[in-house]
Length: 256
Image (tube, rainbow, N blue to C red):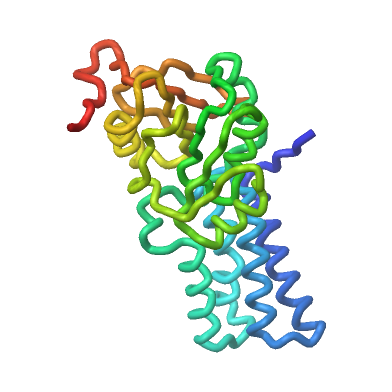
């Protein structure tokens, strides 16, 4: 059984772990800079358990911000530059316009095949696969599908490929990739990205293919499937070509 702690207790616990790692490293004789790097990396890893981008940011940033505020350690400026370099390695500037690391909850797609069946061998793309949580959920729901993952950050791509060895995981830009071959494209992006995703799907995906989005619907479009998850979020599935909602001006037009 999964235990969900009330907010902000998860953030407080992550901050406490950061301080524990930092103080523990110092007690073991590590240099302050080394202990800091270990503590910040511990916070970054634990923050992945957060259920929204803002919460993950707060969880990860709490320890270094509190360290600066308290002046508990004199850390060389080069260490802060090193930590910034690590952040940019995982999240290059080009990826900032897209969603941060939004892990798909385990079992989020379990009920989907009954309402959206796919033939054996169907090509399915997780666009922005991060660490592979979405691919793992897709694999559990559609074990007969050929799963592909696309991720711009190459360290995340490497980690995803290691976790999802049954999938083909590539490094690349989801907006430059061709979505035409896929029977389904799965997204866990952000609201601002959905109009762009809809336009790309309308331009490239075949009639009868599916665009599936966790949590964020396409404005003005009628979803063929809406599935409410146990945590209250919704899964939205749209079959190409898009159908407008009643009273909406028009569906997303196909581009020439």
